[in-house]
Image (cartoon, rainbow, N blue to C red):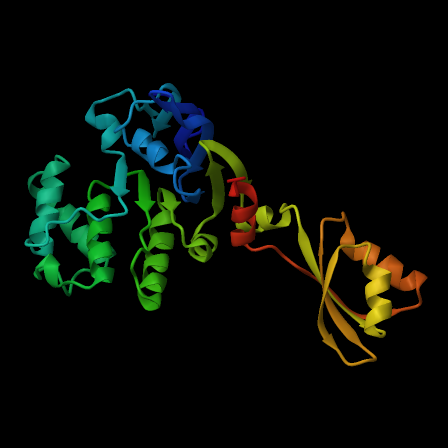
Length: 314
């Protein structure tokens, strides 16, 4: 076991995974630290599942290195696997068991025994808010409680790394808020990899985000950083002018669409890739003796960024 930075729980270096002639993951590197919720995004077929399976030791990398808590994925002993908790997209529960019996079974599978197992079950029932349903059969639980049971089994061994694949899938808005709060609480004590297609949820929950496409990282940073770095931007301006004059003056900035026009004042949206577009708008207004009563930048959403870096020619 070796680690240059004890706060880094997950380290993936130059990971490549090939299946025959298909390249699923191509030279991917990332790291996740304790106390961090890391968003891992990409379109279907981008390589997310292959990466997560490799991290869990279920797929052998073609090349590269993966370590969790300083232990290498090549270490097939319990040292590596017990450091990981995994909640897959389809929660693997036995619906004919009650909650406490299922957690007992899952704990035994994780090599917990006796007092340690009982304490672990009590701990995750309290942490995941399952006290009111611990003696109920899983088949009668709501989707929200089913997800909580799945999360509880992932937490039984107190893993340093928690991998969550679509944890809010199928939840109603209230359940999503509850799950979001729970993930943030859990993420304050361990490293969390959060995969979801619900991009507003990713923005709300994750400290850092990586978007991959065709097995490669195509964007990474905080949600704000990704939005700021997006190729395009949108300006909303209001000018004391008639529509024709305003459109003529600002046409060099980008694509203009008129939001409102009173005859004396016009509000426009300008889609632009011009660097410092706000300054360019201001200079043109001064040069043409126009009064700007509003100028604001409309930041790209995570959805806009995702689309811009993953769109294909097909």
